[in-house]
Length: 32
Image 1 (cartoon, helix red, strand yellow):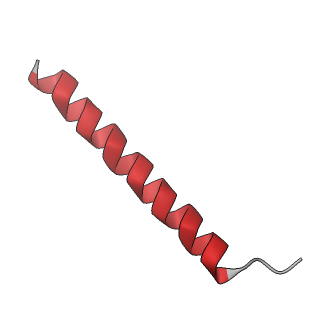
Image 2: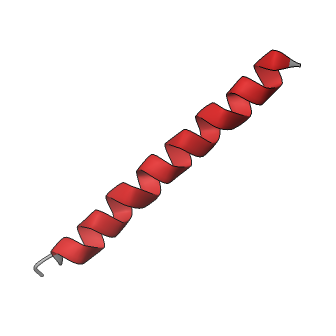
Image 3: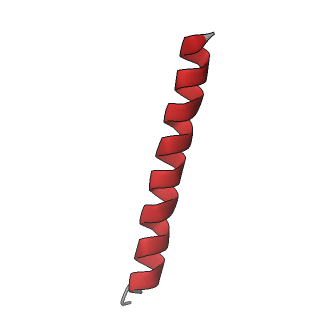
């Protein structure tokens, strides 16, 4: 099974998006 570069890039992008979303929510809760 060879992993496709596009799939790997998609996973990385999703991980970055999820991380930024977490940080944003943390900032909002911290500001309140």
